[in-house]
Image 1 (cartoon, rainbow, N blue to C red):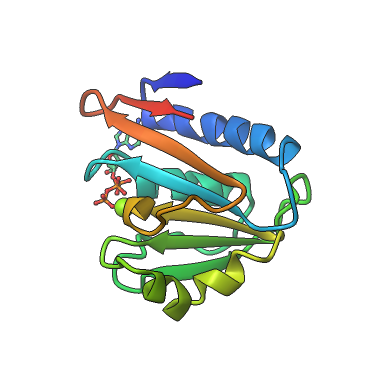
Image 2 (image 1 turned 45 degrees about the horizontal axis):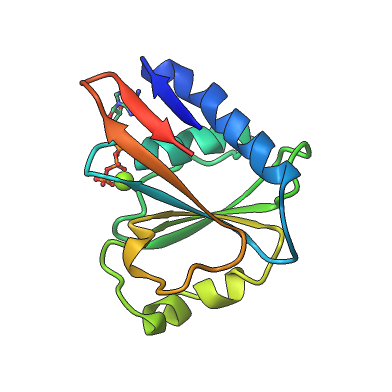
Length: 147
Ligand SMILES: Nc1ncnc2c1ncn2[C@@H]1O[C@H](COP(=O)(O)OP(=O)(O)OP(=O)(O)O)[C@@H](O)[C@H]1O
Ligand SMILES: [Mg+2]
């Protein structure tokens, strides 16, 4: 599914739609992993911030560029997940890194929804329950999302 977003205010509804679709189609007992893929400034972190609104997360979600990984409590009972993990993998590049940041363990927990910016370099073989959302910059306010 491809969706054009004409302004940032439309994003929350799109995030909700994506999560609704995803949560109905979970395949097995592991975390749900979503790669947020797209150029610098295409809207990956903004997507995660809107995920925070949809999932009723209390804290503000910032870019995890410096901390690499951040975990939040999900307070929306409508969805099957209890934790959101937001990762910026820009500076990671190996299987070792996946272990070191605790991602290998977190990926076993079906209560985790894991959003990863720059996940492209992390896996040779894609994990289970892995999805990709592609972000494309159209103009200052417009983006296209492919899911
Ligand atoms: N329709 C839109 N959807 C998403 N972001 C938008 C939109 N319109 C404008 N923006 C702006 O574009 C910027 C996107 O930045 P964001 O940090 O989300 O990108 P990013 O893909 O995470 O970049 P990076 O690769 O540096 O982490 C924000 O400043 C946001 O306000
Ligand atoms: Mg970002």
